[in-house]
Amino acid sequence: MEYIYNIWSSIVSLIKTFTVADFFDVIIVSFLIYEFIKLIRETRAVQLVKGILIFSLVYVLSYQLHFRMLSTILSNVFQFGVMVLLLVFQPELRRALEHMGRSRIGNYWNFGDNLWENDNDDKKIIKAVDAVCRAFSSFQVSRTGALIVFERKTKLGDIVSTGTITKAEVSAEIISNIFYNKAPLHDGAMVVKDGLVYAAGCILPLTKNENLSNDLGTRHRAAVGISENSDAIAIVASEETGLISVAINGVLRRINSIDTLKKKLISLLVPEPKNSSYTYKSIITSFKKVARK
Image (tube, rainbow, N blue to C red; front, side, top):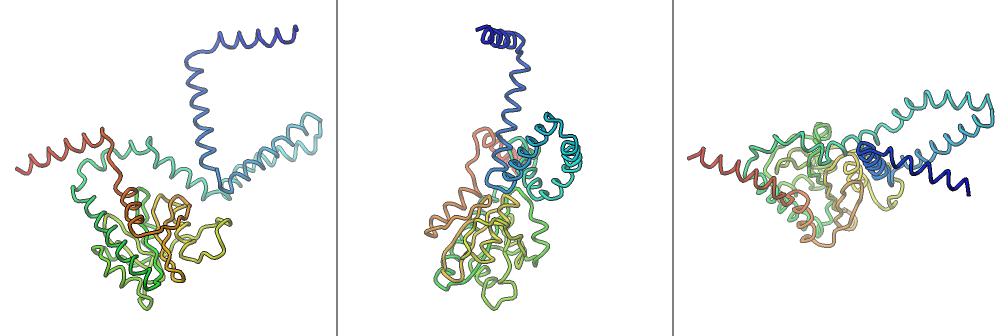
């Protein structure tokens, strides 16, 4: 009974010393832990965290049991292990930092980028989506393999540099010519940027996800790879089956119809503006119209 009373007294004393700063401290730490779990979920970093926890448990036990040699070895491993982990898991760390940069907090740093946005940008993107969908509709019939990547917030300059710069207006005819099986650029990926066919014949990083089906070829693995390393949207047409798939955030989904593909792309590339940003953009647009007059 006395033991329970002591515990209760400790809890009460802790509550009395609990301040508003402590409350926000707990909230922030909880949020960071939650975001960390979201980042490493379904990646090989999950196994890394499990290994670190087991390693830490062994170290604590060896220290408590006075296993001097074992605790000394593990202590030295912990000292140099951080640098090794940074090198081994560099892609995961890069992806995590890019994810933070694309978050709502990171977007505040880019608030000035869209103030003078061209009024026709959305129309260009919708036109590009329509052309891509018409081209993929013909690819389904002709069983033509194709891989198209839509750039979003993450810049794909390193990917574009591996191909041929075109900067052409998007049309179903141009896309069909690029992926014609005897054309020189048909084996690579086409990058759509700012509503233009920005580059073709580009080389994409292949995914290292071992859970993908063995039936998927290089195009599908490249589509998943670029969606893992950026927020880009990759659309694939299978040369063997004529089926269309879309890769987003490392997940490959099959699309049943061209209408579904078009709605999906428009919803992702031309999102509905929020009320506050829409109002702000409307003010800027009105100011530009007055300035033209």
